[in-house]
Length: 280
View 1 (cartoon, rainbow, N blue to C red):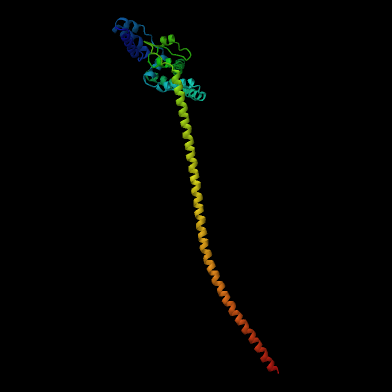
View 2 (cartoon, rainbow, N blue to C red):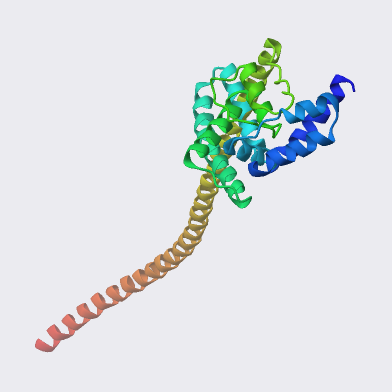
């Protein structure tokens, strides 16, 4: 059997074995080794029983619950490459919250499968998930679902990873080339500029909306004052007409009064003459 085929067969058998509860591992492993042949049988027989912590992480990987953590892993490495301190701080807090939540979920999955996870094992689960977030090679190892023992960030040498995985060890993603980093930084700068432009555009739109509101209120006030002026002008015109009519009437009365006053004087004089004649 070609080496590649033997390795693939070993990985397939290992994936099935590490999906079993730890108590069933040894018996089933020996049975599968007896069913295989040649070098595969030898390698299957050499597979080690996983620790409870490693098995719980394998459960989590097979459930597909580590995708978000590995996305965060990629973002963390990108922020580190770009030396983005603010982004690293934000992602670091998010990493701690996510690791704790995923560890809790792994413990619950194990409990549902009838396996209790001790406090020490739970701590190993958190360390392993954290290592996967912090290191691409550890993430690749965890995602096989074939962990034999837990991992810890800072101890991710190829030999340590090979010893922690049952079957073959997948290659870690190649580090980004400098050209890729430059392109990523340019893209982030462009995205930042686009966000800033969008922010300024939104602010300008809000400012314009406020000015439009103020203009509408000012226009309403102008229209109201103009209407009032028109009303007052009409009232003034009517009052001027009334004043002219009253003045004309007063003038006529004044003329009548002058005529009456003259007649009154003439009558008084006539009365005086009549009195004098009577006295004489």
